[in-house]
Image 1 (spheres, helix red, strand yellow):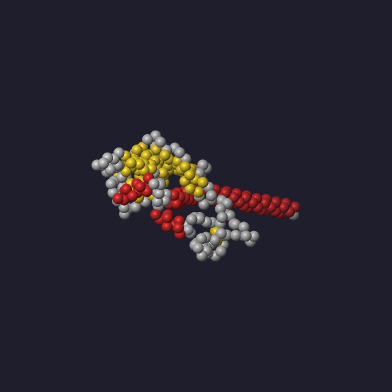
Image 2 (image 1 turned 90 degrees about the vertical axis):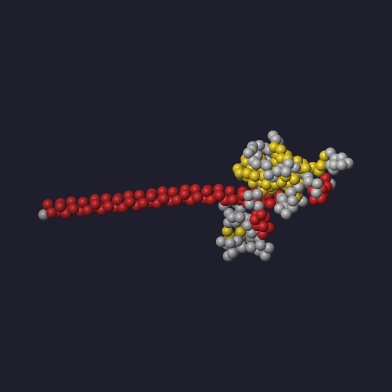
Amino acid sequence: MKKKLDSEGKCILALDDEGNQILDDDGNPMVQDEDGNPMVDDDPEEDDPEVDSKRSKVDKIEYRAVEVRASLLGGTDDQPAQKVLEGRPIVFDTTTPLFIDWRGDQWYERIDHNALEGVDLSNVVLKYNHSMHVPPLASTKGGSLDLTVDAKGMGVVARLANTTQASDIHELVRSGNLDKMSFAFSTESDNWDEKTKTRTIYKFDKIYDVSVVDFPAYEDTSVSARSRLKSEQEQRHKELHRKDMETKAKEAKRLADEEARALAQKEQETKDLQTKAEEQRKRQILKIRTML
């Protein structure tokens, strides 16, 4: 059954006769179906066109933003100074805010200190806004991008190419007009703990790129993470529902068996009474015959 939407494409909440929100068994607001009846809102984000468009862009790839710094190294009359960008996109064993879910609960993220162990970092590039249409500003393959993993996390040092675009971006960072670096990644192993509201990344699958960005990709990050969390919650709810249905089925079978046994016992008691009455009738007939 589809949800009923208003003129802006938003779902319409289900209200009782007194105008109060109707809640489902988990305490979540219910919405109206196409006929105006209350229904459980399995995905409170699915009717949001903006969320849908963002979700289509981020499936397995996620983004995080960190501070980026610009500096100049060396330089002579004959040789221009090397333009350098630095940042630390990954910090181990530190809990950081990730997003606020649709219930208003704050979720956090922690990256395990072994998350980069065995991950191939030999072909990562530095981009601008993660664009596929702009030449890389630096690369690990070319030796101009260093990704250093230590006890604290992963640090990034990029020595920019001597191009107009690289110079412009370096100057924008140095002047503070750009101050965020985002990195794109996918995970191989992670866990969502609903009790602590914390996602722990145990192992990265791949680091795709690092990028200087106009705006941090937290919106995309949030949509991707919420989508993953919602999927896992639904899976757990389905499992709980399955177990609940199995328990109810077992209870119904137990009651049916008890009812069948009670009915059989009652039928046997009736037969026993009938047999006893018949035997008593026969004895009476035999007694009358002997008296004659």
